[in-house]
Length: 111
Image 1 (cartoon, helix red, strand yellow):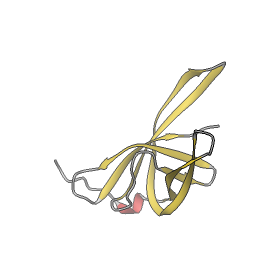
Image 2 (cartoon, rainbow, N blue to C red):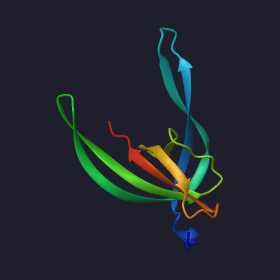
Image 3 (cartoon, rainbow, N blue to C red):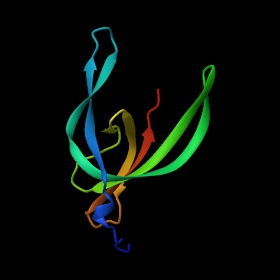
Image 4 (tube, rainbow, N blue to C red):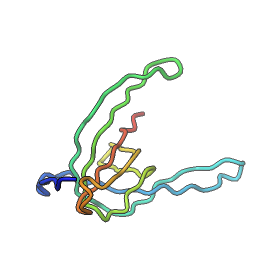
């Protein structure tokens, strides 16, 4: 695979990397809380907007590609936050197989 020429200066979004922690809620279910694992610089690129029928109405599905330096430990199920925005990581991979950058496919959590 070709090495991509990525300008690290484009990683201008300061995000909080959050890992899920599932705990027993005492009633046979579980509650998920997100704990901060660190802060990362990233490039957020909007990819798609779609509408889905959910219950009585429509729900928007917004996806983004988020590029960040490798070594953050990001994995599916993690979350990236910027202020009130929440991006749920659905998949993550080495961007060009050089171990320099990670590309995360994220879904913006709305509502």
